[in-house]
Amino acid sequence: MSEKNRDGKRTARERLAVEREKQKAADKRRRTLIVGASIVCVLGLAAVIGVVAANAGKDKSTKAGPAVAPSGAQGKDSLAIPVGKDGAKSTLTVWEDFRCPACQAFEVAYRPTLHELTDAGKLRVEYHLVRLIDGNLGGTGSLRAANAAACAQDAGKFRDYHDVLFASQPKETDDALAGNDRLIELAGKVKGLDTPAFRKCVQNGTHDGWVDKSHQAFKSGGFGGTPTVLLDGKNIYEDRTMTPAKLKQRVEAADRG
Image (cartoon, rainbow, N blue to C red):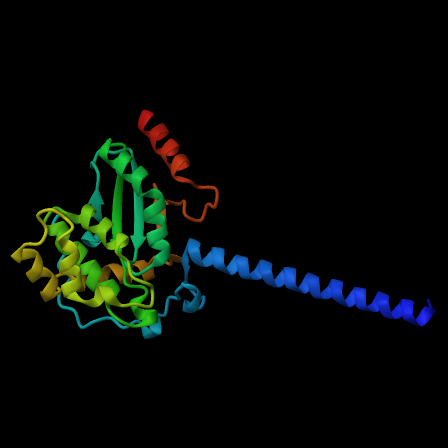
């Protein structure tokens, strides 16, 4: 074989190796983006990968009336909906958007553990509802769903309805939760919730102003995205080693003192 042919084959092999390395790098970047989109709705990234950006300048707040807090709301400005006993030694603070797919992923993974711990009196969860995706993808589904959840709180049915909303979450770009009829239909999945009082609350947007106030508190808090999950003030959702089992261990250890 001539020296020229050997050089040509060697160059071809080198080009092929380079192309393979480029493809590996592209595949790695693609996997990273997919995993990132499934973990958290991070502010500043494109919505096309299921992640939303805080867009204060374009946040389309409704012309809501006074901030009417739902029954039993607590905390600063009565913006937290509590689930669990007041005397629990651990408190989990959760900021969520009902249109956020990462919030749904968190709920699916952690819900059984949260129910177990709150029912046992070992954990208290404080839910804060925001409308982050409304301001970035358009629509009012986050607002309408949050208002309906607050109406469910008035009826003492928040936790069950909250779970139904996430279980029935449409695609992030589908604003199906903007329809009051749909929200009332979903209330039929919670025993005793679909009442004239609940329907009136949903249709009148009784708690719209409260939802907007909660959203403003979220932005003022400088949080990185939804869901934001704080255990006794410490952001545990940023801890990639956190699991439901690990959360349970921490809460039970605190409960034992």
